[in-house]
Length: 141
Image 1 (cartoon, rainbow, N blue to C red):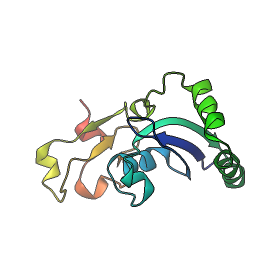
Image 2: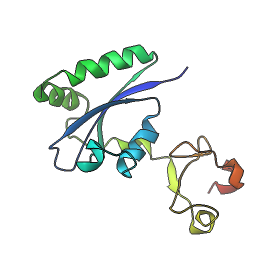
Image 3: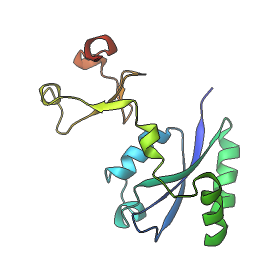
Image 4: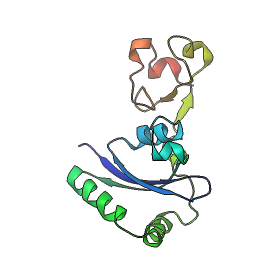
């Protein structure tokens, strides 16, 4: 079953709080952290995941996103603090099972280091590594 996520991200100083929805939380957080999404989040350097919820039905996720976006900032802060009192960057836990692939592999068609997930043989942006001959067995340490 496909998962959908409502998430909240902020910047280093916690001046802004962005609420969004996605079907791949790891990919979307990576995009925010690497400036891949133009607009508000790139302008204000929104790159710290501080809250998320998982849904099985996209309609429930959309309704929850709209509900949160309608709240005042104080209520959003209280929601974050209920799950994450220290406003820690939760993306560190999402990416804990990934590692940077070596320069040798990066030179094969890559312009920057990839993060490889050993659980799924995909990069953090969801691309399969099989076409490059990179498999879980070959790169396990």
